Image (cartoon, rainbow, N blue to C red; front, side, top):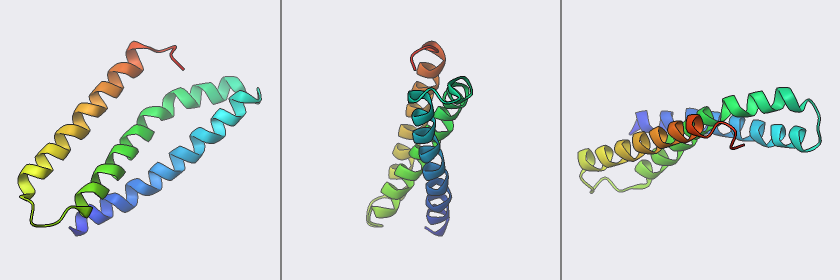
Amino acid sequence: MEKLKNIQFVSSIFFYVFGFTLFGLAFFIHNNLHSDLALIILKSIDLPFALAALLYGLSSLRISLKDDVKSDMVDSVLIFIAVFTFIILIYLNFAFKDFI
């Protein structure tokens, strides 16, 4: 359980840093301030943000579940959900490059 709390802590730091960076970049793009550089950074930071969000959300969910639940099955399902969602996000990111 301590390992999950450490994962949650580190991923929460990355989640907030990437999230505030994305909001700042959206502000720069909206106001046409360094919009070329902001667009490049925005397109390259979206997958790390998604990974940090998945790790933070699923580790928080696993910590909040009671220990009565069978641990191996829940862990397997949560890992499958995280990997499947991240693969879909990677596909959407590369299949639709000009979506943003």
